[in-house]
Figure 1: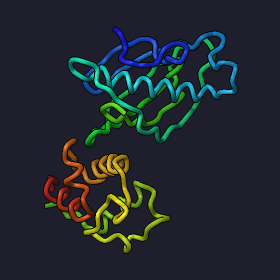
Figure 2: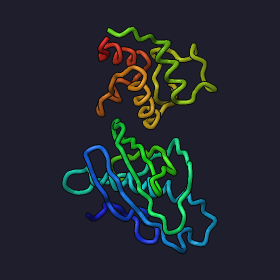
Figure 3: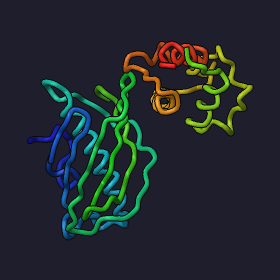
Figure 4: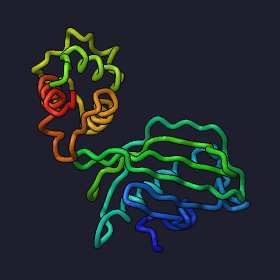
Length: 130
Length: 87
């Protein structure tokens, strides 16, 4: 299944779709064994947050009937990190639609690695083009 | 009708949006606009967070297209909760 995301390698952090339901979806992405932080001092938790935001965007796009619906990231809130991924790990990214109001859609997200949740937070997407 | 009070909604509004340091409850006029510089200055993200908090606290859903109607003021929120509560 092709993902409705504008991100291209190496900045695409959602690789595959495991499942898509009406109000939830699960994606996965395997970190490269080398170069996952692009030589920068990036906390690995940041990769989880970005993966969650991209998964939310992909889910939002997949929910639309017909042509993928445009959307923009409106906010990231309430993030908690209880672990971090290592190079070569596969992230399981779970997204669940919680509430929609007007043009905004609030989604709950979780990132799991080796059957352990390492990050959770909320992503808000604004429907329509920026 | 549910026994929802203006004070309870004001408390929920200030707590859920972390506005305690900016406003005392008595400063929030029930008929004041929630949006814009003349009111509390809330935005659409605040409204979404408040909608979630209202659903959790009062068990009352705010529909996708009801935001502009419900979030005019504290009074309109109270009226919506009262009109849509089971008890």
